[in-house]
Image 1 (cartoon, each protein chain N blue to C red):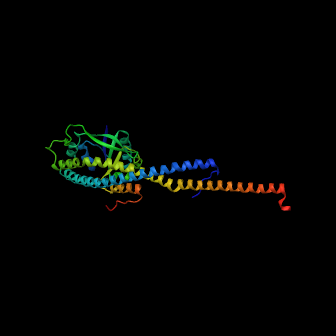
Image 2: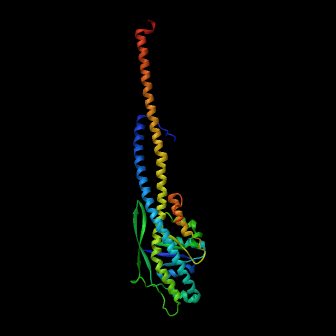
Image 3: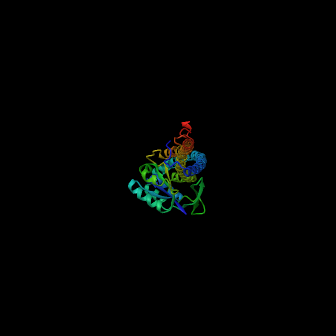
Length: 218
Length: 105
């Protein structure tokens, strides 16, 4: 790893040492964050998979009922039956903080008091397959909402994990080795300077003694 | 207070109307982009979208991935199911871990 392009001075050395300490601490914290996020993410993603399987089955089941209803009833009467929904579903959203990732949490609210108030038509002119279709959809709805929540959380966490992983790797394999190398380089350079100063002084001392006493002539 | 929407071909999403979701029947991808933008601007927290339409709008959906809201969830429709929903779950794992370690669970 290339060392940083800095002057080999004592001040630089102090600065770098301080930076190295910060980088190490940051690396440790980010690594902990990544590990914890990963643990929670894997749990969530398993749930996501299971939920998705369940929801997809439920919906195709409802779709099957719906196609039967559609074939039994005329398009117009089906349209009329579903034209004015009685129920209205709305969501209250809370944000949960998972390792500094804000994930949404949904709370369902219904317009009418009875959550099962889903049949927006009289039973006289509609097929019972339509009832089945609406009922199977309503049965799968809580799972669908949970799926939306979990899937969004997974999405946000995956992005965050990717970011954190990059930071951890950048610190571990680039920044920290770079700092270490530069610190080593500066220490070596300073030591070398010190040695060369000592040698120079010794040499000068020799020369001065030589001038004063003329040892070599005797 | 947030609302829930369903988008896609009429046959696939019609049933959701009775549950209290707002439905947006749409066939054309161009039109769907506009509708989706309107939906996002007008306070919807969850948008269910048929897989067929989702696969046509993938570039548009990419924009909403990083935002906390809305959650756009692909669901199977009556026709043209591409398995994009399950594939996206695998994609999350791949993005986070580096490879899809849960593919055979």
